[in-house]
Length: 616
Image (tube, rainbow, N blue to C red; front, side):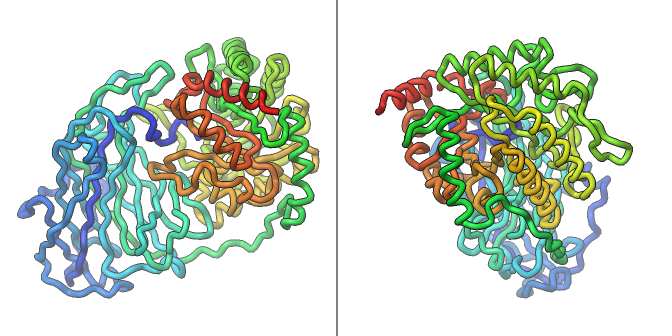
């Protein structure tokens, strides 16, 4: 989880949703000129001769030879049906769409307009999608297919409000198989530049790698893909711990999609490099499980059948005003020192740890190097060669604070943002951030990174450290989404896990959900870790929160992230997780920097912990 995470269904949001199906047919015609870069920054030609909810299909057989099209008249129109999600909540005053499929360049494109007029107050988080039915199902299991295109939203759809509000609008490509299971691509923020065309992150679904910041639902049939289209999410979420109620927002305008392109790609062979594992077989896991379980119980003070609670501090505050993500260790890239040993951060760190201790919590999860925007020195080629001189002083300050405040620490070394394809963020993309996928792709860079991190862990692995997290949600590293790139990332984390394990350190990886943890990290670390969010990129989590921990194997497992629920639901949620066999559950997050605040449930968690302690 990080500040870009999707809004929860439990938050008060102003959202809109629209879904409709576009049955497509084909016709023989010549594709028009492809839109140029200058075209993409101007309005498309007016669409005339179309009534609401009509589709004009003109798909050239020659441009899409792998599909068997049935020729029809180029001017044929087809009535469509519109299904409005969430209409029973009474938010929608008027929703309508005008669509047209037209011939495109190579090999097929869809131009789409989604027009709506709606007034919203608040309601659950939902998203809408527009998919077109393919004339013939695609088999993506033998040859990968690639989805790309452009989206534009008018300023009227971005909403308005005080500067402390984040008003997101996001788009992503979506596929659906014949049985209704979905495949979502990575989300792209389209409200940063309202009125301009934005290229939405590409989608190339495969079984060989996860879809970063997207999702391949369990059972999705790559050999039977029947629909493709776009998914849109919009809403207001509070930005900052003091904001609790977003303002009312009117959403009026037209969302446009240009050149939604579906094209085949040649498969890329993946190097057959063997991936080392700490526990190669089930018998290895069986032998290690009781030793690790006893070690955790002893450190956490647990009896049989009990569960610990952890809170995600994530990253500390500097001077009580600024989030020190990625700058907790070493000098910040803009020249200020916001690290744990700085006066502006240390006082707030201790204040937070003391608050947790007073409310019964003894474990805190903290991000360290994050996206590597700080902390390392590099040579001219970009290979890491040393730590920033302030790194060791900052880490020593964090360890000392945990020791003196009576807290155990789960430090997360790296975050997926180190390779998420983003180099700048913020209003007008004014802030440079860390982006170093080459550290995983080049063997010499990878070896240097592993060596430095292993030395760091060796120097700080002491009684204050419960376990070391190698990386937060590596499956969301967008820049590593291709199979050959994801294998390089996996190799790095596998080798890092072995290096730390040889030093006697307990290891974990913060996997984004249970399915990915089973598939990519089984037997790689000492303590399997999953994150459970009710919505995974705006769709319901396919795994129940009380899925037995034994699904991950015999090693003791933890839930590293779960979003806060209403205070009255805290005890039932923790009972579910304890009953499922997890050793620890971690709430996101103490600072409430992204709208998920722990403070409102702190007393409910403390009451649950007190009740657990009274049970003999």
